[in-house]
Length: 341
Image (cartoon, rainbow, N blue to C red):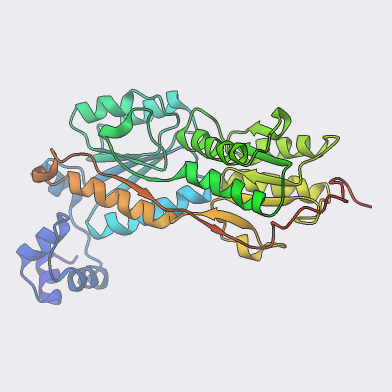
């Protein structure tokens, strides 16, 4: 079994430098040490390191839905940073439940050095209790109603909803539907708010039957889309508030043989790996998903430095952008959405 001295010899550095690297500190020969570790198959004694430092070398990550491709990309970004600094991830799924999230956080707090959290709802007490106990907590994607005292990496969800509406309005759509996420989470509420603000500013009214509240899940979006298609006057465009909602809407439109964008235009929030490959390719509100994970992990590791624990919270709001593809087009008012023959 390779030792720290073997790694040092292979990398051309001192054992002390390797030790600092394994503790997550920055060293100039990091790439050489990383290569030596991989080539020799070196596995540091995590238990011994933890006893010596008082740290577990483990970071907890709690997300609302691990099946969501967005969170998969975010965790990939986190892991790309944590791996290089010698930390492991402990990943858990809250299933969009505040109660389950509280239980997970209480259990996880005894096993980790810090936590990255996408809160299930914006009204949570457990993150504040953890922070007050001295455990670093960083928010990603979602925020608390009064979360300004936490580090966070977010996107401008309100601007995303607004830009989606403006895109459809600019194409000439006035009968526009939105399938939003749960309003107890900041992304669900802010995306809907931005969308409604934009259509209101344009003098367009969105009737209740077109303003639908989903749960960021595929099945619920499927059912809500079917309800839109059953209307006497279906919408000419739909905005879906996350990628799983988009998938549910697409499935309903496909099952009902609705032509996209000939009968109904569709724009989603968050790109899909298959977005450009769909027929038609999907227009989306896009954001830098992997980069969000990278930044969140860097913020958390920054808090592990004793000299930085009293720094003011760092809150990063990343930009979003519209990727225009072929799933949106001007409305064809002469056609009615529904099953074709």
